[in-house]
Length: 275
Image (cartoon, rainbow, N blue to C red; front, top):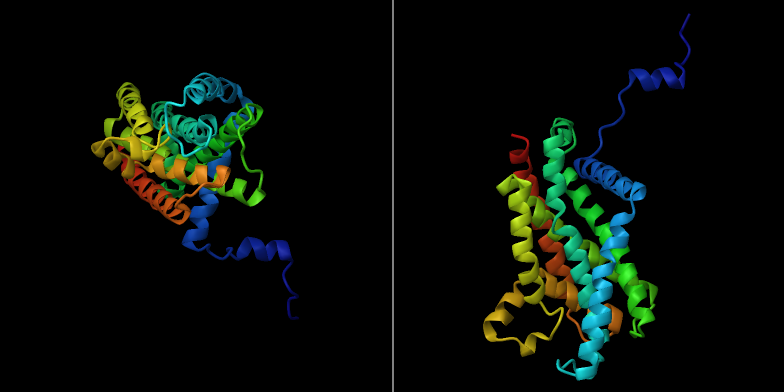
């Protein structure tokens, strides 16, 4: 007697599922890591509230003061309007630049070692953490946009432009978080990383076009600004939010390449933390 067809449940047990393609596996694992990181934010929102204080002070004190004294040429745009995209980029960078501390903490608690022995590619681990930093930064950017709107900044509410803002913020945060994780893979300790992070955040901020146009900078600082990814992030945010001239294609391209290079470099150095 010929046996009948096997039940579906039995066939699923006896037949292995088709292997995923490598890029799908990386994306799936990166998405899972990103969701794990965001779950931490869901259980403790204190970070969002405390990080909203600094950009609010920049806009309320620095922005309002320099708007009144007209000390910085902005091409006819109110200085507060000119400043708001720079503060969005700054607050996003400050969230991402210390992301390496979390990696070191996970190393010290044994979590990183367990993650590295799983089949998850290292690039997926880094990408998941980098884009989780990007999502946190987008939430922070929304807070700054609301504050700026309450202060009368003439921002766009075009959905496509706001989507572009979110993409730019995510790419910029991904790069700076990967930079932080790369430094963590080199220095290996939280104290050293804190010192280096504090040493580079202000030069990155003041060496960009966040506070003033590149044209008013001395020549050497203009060269630094052109090599600074934060300048491209600010330029894109101004173009999208204020509708002023910007090199959007160049800005997107530079930030995408910077994020890809950052993920690659951080992935290569991730194993040093587990030794």
